[in-house]
Image (cartoon, rainbow, N blue to C red; front, side, top):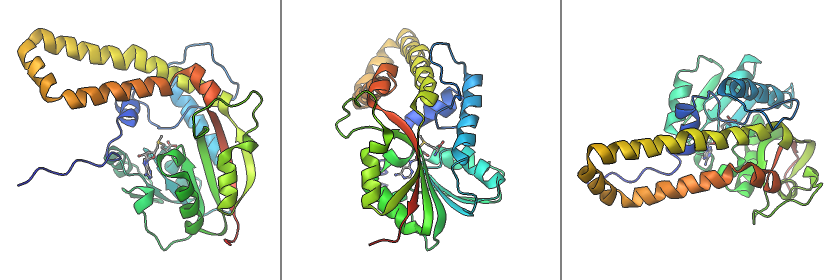
Length: 285
Ligand SMILES: C[S@@+](CC[C@H](N)C(=O)[O-])C[C@H]1O[C@@H](n2cnc3c(N)ncnc32)[C@H](O)[C@@H]1O
């Protein structure tokens, strides 16, 4: 038998795995604080409450007439479950095998899960609402907007909540207004009309600060501990192992570096805006 083909990169995302399996959070999106705060330390219990609040605030944007919802990049199902509890019928999709197991355990008859990426998703159904909750950056943005438009019934809605930045990752000017986001221009080109735009950057910012601390105070020391333990117990095997896995070792260093950059609170404040956008699908040209 030949070597199995390498898993596609979306099969298991280690950043998301860290959030659920190491930090033990039961949601993959940011937390939401009604009163923005930054200085105090937030513990994991408070974070769980803030993530539940994020879902509540997100669902306030769902048009009440929307019966069928396509939840694209559905994570571990907390938004889908909350939507189902409010009577919506949810088709949830995510390519991550770890997420599939969460949906298998989800006791929600109105939720159907499909393990696929958006690019490969096929359906003849036309949905009332397509939801991108912190998922629009996982695929090409223009593709995402066009495909969402195709999958919506005329007059249906696309609800996008997530981080936005300039292509070159440059800083936003002081006083930047999210109605000027390049993503909204692209959405207009794809026949969407904005009907609700809210900048929630200050409301979600404590999440970044908490994750940054999770990396510095939990992930990095745990990796150092595992390394020291292995080196002390079996120095030769560890050397051999590192030689055999040198590519993976470099990859891990790269991923950690990227993660640290991404979760640097000062950099986030400067270069990211977190917004919730409700867009209506206009008849295509
Ligand atoms: C940050 S999580 C957000 C999860 C969830 N929507 C939430 O708000 O908690 C991003 C999700 O997008 C999924 N994803 C990654 N690549 C994708 C793709 N190409 N198509 C669809 N979903 C994708 C991930 O597996 C994950 O479920």
